[in-house]
Length: 205
Image 1: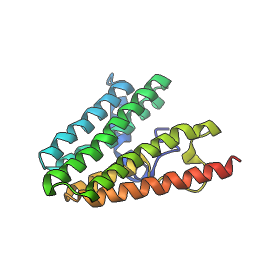
Image 2 (image 1 turned 45 degrees about the horizontal axis):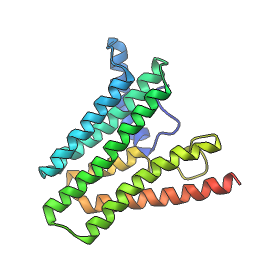
Image 3 (image 1 turned 180 degrees about the vertical axis):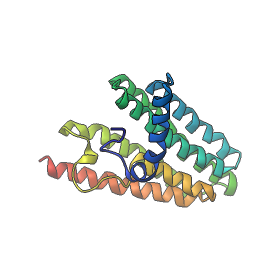
Image 4 (image 1 turned 90 degrees about the vertical axis):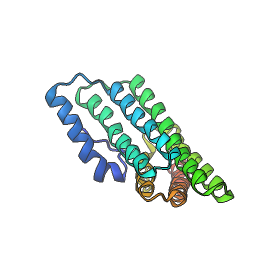
């Protein structure tokens, strides 16, 4: 009941193992934490990662990004468990997620700038990583005009979802490898967006 059909690979394999335990603890202890409060807590943890990139401590930033990603699953789990899902909450959570997505990539890019100085490759891949992340989210949003979540349609699914992109940020940040992270996020995002765009057009002709 706590899982979602649209979960990405990392959510299914890793994140839900932790978020569901946090959710069950909240439910068992009857702590009065609302889904919207949980969304905001996840947002704050994600924002807290940003200054650590500026301080050139990327491994701490990466851990905070991944913790934020795990906590982002708790709000939806609480909403489903307590049957309090709402359009307001979904909108609130989605908007906060986008801010964290942008700050994670921006922080990683600024860390690269502070560490090695400016470069065209850093600028190029930073722009692609940010725009690609937003394009995946936008595709999922507008693709619902066909009656279902785009991730549930066709064969392409899971490999460029938010949980996967933030996990890429997390893993590469542990080793201070900013450029490979940006490249991987960019490629995953644009391959998925392009492929899913074509899939949706073909399946809904």
